[in-house]
Length: 485
Image 1 (cartoon, helix red, strand yellow):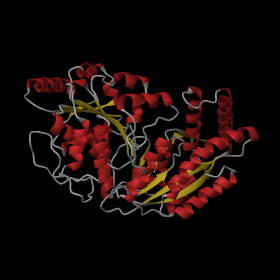
Image 2 (cartoon, rainbow, N blue to C red; image 1 turned 45 degrees about the horizontal axis):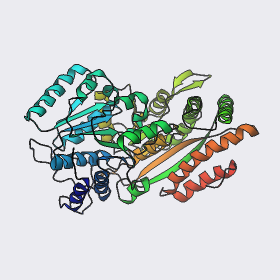
Image 3 (spheres, helix red, strand yellow; image 1 turned 45 degrees about the vertical axis):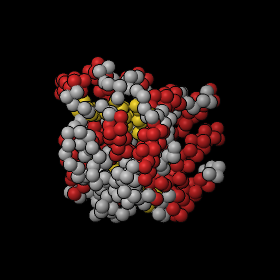
Image 4 (cartoon, helix red, strand yellow; image 1 turned 180 degrees about the vertical axis):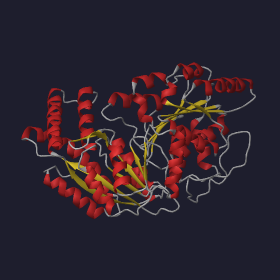
C-alpha cells in the first residue's frame, strides 16, 4: 500500500473542514444520511484531537494515542477512519474492545459517522454470516466500506480469526484500551496482515509487565507526542474541574496482621529478585495485598459517616474493590453487596449495583435512571473503569484504592467527564494507611507507599482545593517519614 503520509498530514492540517471554535465533542450529532461514511456536519474536533490525527498520519499510520480519560479518544479514532476513507479509500474498520458494553458504546458513536457496524460478539451465528457476506460484497464492489466492532474475547476465537484473511489491504485496526493487548494470547491473535494500526488508552503501559508493554508498542506503534494529560484536559475544557477529599482509613487488627505478613513476603521476593518487572510471584502478592486494602472493613463505617450528611446528593458513583470482606459478625461477603446494602437499606439512598454480571439491557436501564436522577447512585467494580460514558456523574467515592496507576487514573478521570448540567465534580478518596511494621518490613513498605502517595499528590495538586488536599497528604508523608516528593 503506497501512501504519501506526509502529504496526507499536510492536507489534513490545511483543510477548512473544521472551524476554530471549540465545541463539545460528545452528544447528538446531526448528519445527512448518505450511503457512505461521512463526518457529522456539526461536529468540531478540539485542537488536540486534530493534532492527534496529524501525528498519527506523520507516524505512517501507526501509533498509540495516550489521552486522558474522557477526552474523546473514540471520536478521534473515528475521525482518522473517515479521513482514510476519503483520502485513500479505506475499506474496513475493525475496532476491538475489552468489554461488551464498550462495543455498544462504540456502535452508538460510529452510527453518528454514518457507519453501519457489525457487532461481532456473543453468539457467532449472530454475526459471522453477515460479516462473510459483507466482505464478499466488498470484493465485488457492491459496497465500499465495512465496520466491525468486536471484543477481545471474540477476536481470539476461530469464528473471527477465520475471517481476518479476507480483510483487504486497506483496513484499519483500532485497539481500544490497548493495555489489554499485552497478554500473549491476545498478541498472537492480532492480525499481522493489517498494516494500519491505532491504539487508544489513557494508560497504555501495563502494570508490572514490561514485556507486554513492549509487545503492544511493537504492534501498534509508540505513544505519539504530545501526550494529552489530565491537566491539559481540564485546562481545555475536555474535563471539568474538581474538588478532592482524601479520607484516611485504618485497618482492623486482623487485617493489619495479614497486611504485615504480605508485606514481609513481598520484601523477601524483592530481596531474591530486585527486578519488579515480569515477576509473577511478586505481582500475585501485590494483588493480594491490594484486595486486602481495597476491601478493608473500616471503609464501611467511614462511608456511612460520609453519606449520612449527603443523603440528598445525586449522580454519585461508588467504586468498590472486587474482593470480599471477612467480618466476625457477618462472615464473608462481597464489598459491592455490602456497600449497596448500607446505602440502600440503612441510609435510604436510591442506589443499585452495576457490575460485570449485570445484563447489558439492565445496564442501559440503570444508566438512564441514573442520568434522570431516579437513581441517586451506582455501585460499581471494574466495568465502569474503562471507556464507559456516563457524563452525568458529579460525585465519586473511591472505596477501592489501588496501586495500579491505570485504575487510579481511570477511576478518578471517569468522574470528570463534562455534562451540560455539570460545572465541577467532587471526589472522596478512601485511602488505607499502613499499620505499624517492624523495621525490616517498614523499609519495603516505604518504597511501595511512596509510589502511591506520589499519584495522590499529583491528583490533589490539580484540584480546586489543592492546598487543603495536599496538606493532608503531606501530613501522611511526614508521619511515615517518606522522602520529599
